[in-house]
Image 1 (cartoon, rainbow over the protein chains, first blue to last red):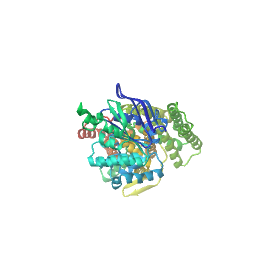
Image 2 (cartoon, chains in turn cyan, red):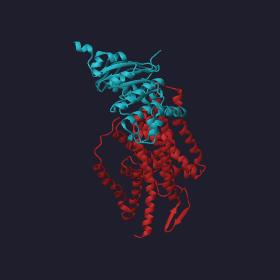
Image 3 (tube, helix red, strand yellow):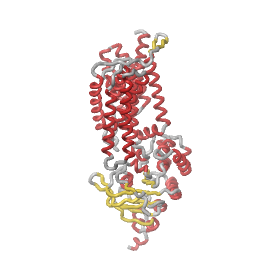
Image 4 (cartoon, rainbow over the protein chains, first blue to last red):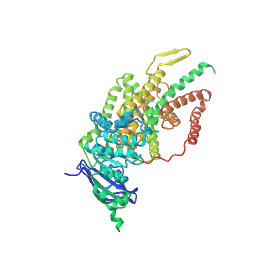
Length: 243
Length: 346
């Protein structure tokens, strides 16, 4: 079976500076894939380019079709969704309106069932549905951003640093929800600096350094990899001690 | 000055202020959604007024033909953009609103103009013609450069203003025109006499504001428009096309402009270039509202109307000067109160 998302030999540049170089990746149906790496490695740039926010040189195909000439809005319509790093909520509108607009491209019937699903996933949002998005706490805003993306019934949800700036207990909550998405058939591409949490929830992982993938493989194996452990999990492995 | 004169001036000011409020709201809306400062708003006023006056006097307005010509141009733009991926369905979706619709309106206008249509039909036809012009104006002049800076958009706005004004001279000539009143009845309240026309101005203004409020508060498209105004990228990420929002904003703005024109042309004689000055006063109200606040804009518009009417009584030669001088203290205050903001990039 062909993968849901496949990126082949992607380059993304800001002017003359290449932020992403010759990157290839795949996300299969129902998979949770994570890209981990340090600040400035090019993870966000890659996600934005896949979404169509930045121009990308290379090939991106989604569900068997080439995305090359599609605008952001059309990528949303085919089932690709991005929860951006800055969440991009409609701050002066209430929670319910934000969610309703998330279902802008789907039918009314689908939207109604999506509301139920999202409120079941994030009961907090239901409690606050009349509150303005801009007045929510950071964690609630992250939930709203994810909920809004899910309202459009995406096949692939791309999450950019969902744990950024959140309290540990809320981070745990967010990651538990990401795990739950697997059961509802949504594939996830997760970009994270919090490698430990990301590797725990993901099936496979890519490690990004200076705009290129340096390692990839099964998430559990990656968590055991000496280089990953030393650079991203914050402890030295046995192997390195012996050198 | 006695109370009667003061009340008269007040009434006059409020009537004009209501018109400026409508125009100011349209400017705020268009700027919030598309970042365009809509200089050609005044031309929508002129076109609406003079199209209505022409229809009422049995002359064929040139604007109906202009709508078709601009529609064909807009279709050409769509065709060019889609030249690599030509879909029949998409072509039809562009052909119907851009070519078929204005052709129908043109045919209808030609058919009705010699038969002395009732006032309501003339109004609806004028609104339709100008609304279409506004829609195509966005497609032709602003959509292709939607991603550029506010300054570039402003220059384009000035350009379209000059072009439309020139066309207005061509279509309607240099002489002023007046249109028939919408309502002839009058109401006397103490020393004040309300003409049917000024009552229709109030009614139309209030009705339009309520309609706008309902549209933005309750409908999905209204919310989508607000969403684009609040966060352009966020709106695109949920699948709201910036171009769709821009089209709706321009459609509303041209509709409001045309309606304002139709409301005032029975009261004052309008020339091909009068609309610009009227639009500018709406613009002052919008500036006082900071180009973001709808309620502040509406209140400021009433203030502009009142200042104008009193200054035309006391110093009629300096009427415009006094009104536009209002801007200076407001801008001063705003620049002192708000820190310098770098232009948003996206």
